[in-house]
Length: 345
Image (cartoon, rainbow, N blue to C red; front, side, top):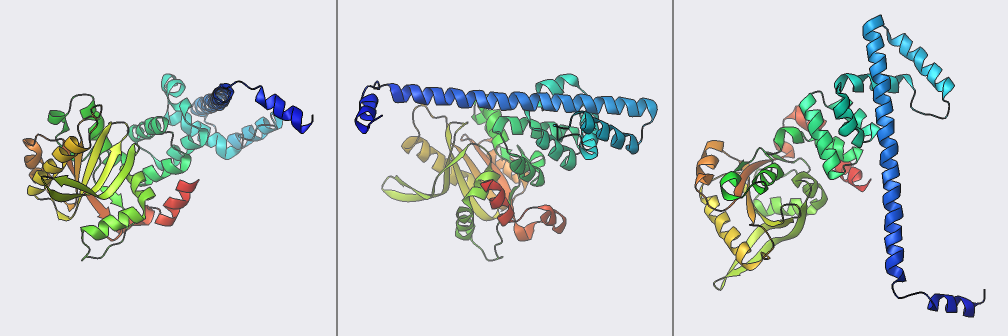
């Protein structure tokens, strides 16, 4: 085809052709994704069935590890094109069946996560309720295996929803439940090492320098709006430490940083910020803004008393820095370099 013919062919394309092409590309990608998910589902179900059969035979016949080695060799000989029949993998299949005995849960929930995510849970999480929590979060947020491992190492199960909040009396249900689950206590800023004389601005700069790790610690849904965000009220200037917008809550989130312990007067300042943000920034379709006072330490009784009669939705939580973490916990956590490397994958 000559250049002129090619130009003529392109000139005959309808104006809405790019829209059609974009639609078809999206359909193909969606079908590819469904195919991947279907294959994974069948693989997990197959491995669970194999594990359940091994488990039943061991309990009935008293099989030892050598039988699993023999079984692995026979299965690989029969199905050479399949890569998952190593003795180690068969032991994981058995562990999977032992950890998740309910066929309904396996079919409806567990089969939605990849096999290697399941292995990560078997290796790193022993509590059944915690395993189910991380499975549900993986499905909800589409976590990669590396992010799942980071959340487990960061003890998300023990921390989510633990901040002191007044959401049940300041927000309608179910937003109040979602808002409570959005906050945690404590926040682990193990990627920061600040001296004893550090002030709030040092903490803020450190968080902004490691914004990706900070957003990962905050959790899914947080979109960064700005730091030292300027508000003008009655001709005076005010500056919010950190301002976010939460995509699921559909509201602004104001964070006030404190390097010392929580004080009751912090709630008054936060109430002012929330009123100003709702008046100056909030869109009519947005929900009421929420606040988080993030302190180095807190007395939970004082925080609960403070928030009891506060009309604006807010929470109080603490944070820990690298030097403040106990040695046994700090040794098990990834470094900032490891966190950022995992985020790039």
